[in-house]
Amino acid sequence: MTPTNPPIPEPSTGLPHVVDTPSYCRLSEWGLLRVSGEDAAGFLQGQATCDINALGDGGLGSGAFCTPKGRVIASFRIAKSGDAFYLLLANELVPVIHKRLQLYVLRSRVILENLSDQYILIGVMGPGIETALDKGEQELPETPGLGWSHDMGLGFMKISEDPSRYLLLLAANHDGAQGSISQLPSFQPDAWKREEIAAGFPWVTAATSEEFLPQMLNLDCLDGIGFKKGCYTGQEIVTRTHFLGQLKRRMFRLCCKSDSPIEAGAVVYAELDGENKTAGQIVNACRNKEGNIECLAVLSLELADSPKLRAADPQQGPLLQKLSLPYSLAL
Image (cartoon, rainbow, N blue to C red; front, top):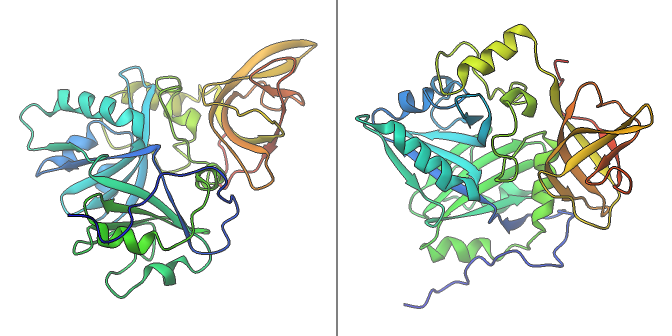
């Protein structure tokens, strides 16, 4: 049967960066993993950096999965709904995490599902977005968290309050809700990425997987690490670093003018005593409404205040300037 409403299109070029009206964008770079079952909470408690037991029903949190050496394989946002947990990750890392977690299930009553092909992820924001979404058919979360309209095959994950942003989890086979959303104007995916960067939230991708400790990504500032929750994969090194104060790198928000894109994983250089030294690595980057590049980068604390930080090339790379973060760093 031919769908009665147009499908949600992939992002195209030429869309606006400035979102001044309720708008949407399909977020193809993100994927969705569901962990459910009677033992789901206990299972995730032993794998993730965050305190899963502190997450209430409908609540939203953040965290990471680490190697035994404490290096972050993937960062995530996580929402609880009943006995199920919905994890938002970089799409390219969902199969990696799915396979890795499956190794630890053993006899636990846990079901792992990669839902990336079953749900379309749509970012919506803009002044008046609640009014545009509230059709009287569902209740939107008042605070960051997850709510569902099962009749519409639609989940509403409130990501932030200022600005108000929602991630819609739209069942791919439910064309009715798709048609309603597709009536809104679209915006450039970088506009959503820019808000994530402004929030200081690190999205680990394949280019930076297993490069950083969670604290280097400021996950402790985002309540993404439970230092008193007990054992999880990588916990020993993460906790030891925290209590011994041995952290030598932190994530900073930066910007630069550049005609060329800056990719995740690109090296950041600093000039010190006339020499160019490796200062750190780009985590995420995007263009803002002025056409400049904003990014998050993990930098050596020794070199982070260098007046000459350059991205990608120590001689010709664009100069990076620091921007503020919405939280304080424990330096």
